[in-house]
Length: 199
Ligand code: IMP
Ligand code: MG
Image 1 (cartoon, rainbow, N blue to C red):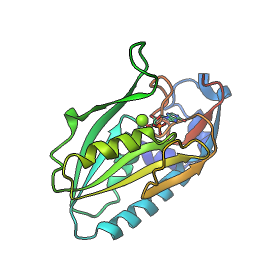
Image 2: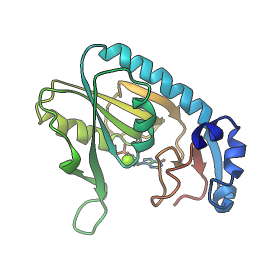
Image 3: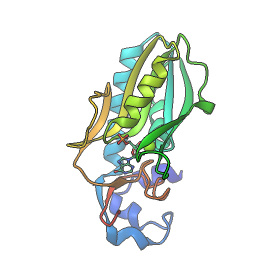
């Protein structure tokens, strides 16, 4: 199987493996969290989540698109009564709206009323996205609401929000891989890497 093939080798191998496009990015990236380390942390988080919810059915809502890989790996370790849904969040950057203003796209959201919700995002940076989504979910009559992020950037938070589950604290750098993108690229990388020349 391709996945386990990749994971059984050091990240340097994955980096050079024929399954990745040519190494046009290799010079500008540095692996921050190797694939194997992410996988073992995801298992730890899953155990913690399973222990917290136990017999309560949970609906995991992934914030598109960055949470996709994290969510997909996490749920396969969760032995729980489980539903999955998604929500979109995008920042307006147009001339008519202030930079960073967030638009919530609830079209893919299942019925969450009366349900125990775990909201998952890829990264907590300023905290605006998660904070705004928490506010949105709270208007929908959920039974309970928790949050989880794979990464939390140190020294960047503008709003106080403490995720219930955090994979890794990372330094203030622009990272890609394992769902995180730069111009919608690099989401498929099995590790998290610092993109040196991100602008
Ligand atoms: P926040 O609203 O500032 O917390 O930003 C959260 C969103 O910004 C995440 O869901 C990501 O989509 C994006 N983001 C923040 N930092 C990074 C990064 O280092 N790499 C890729 N995306 C990022
Ligand atoms: Mg995102």
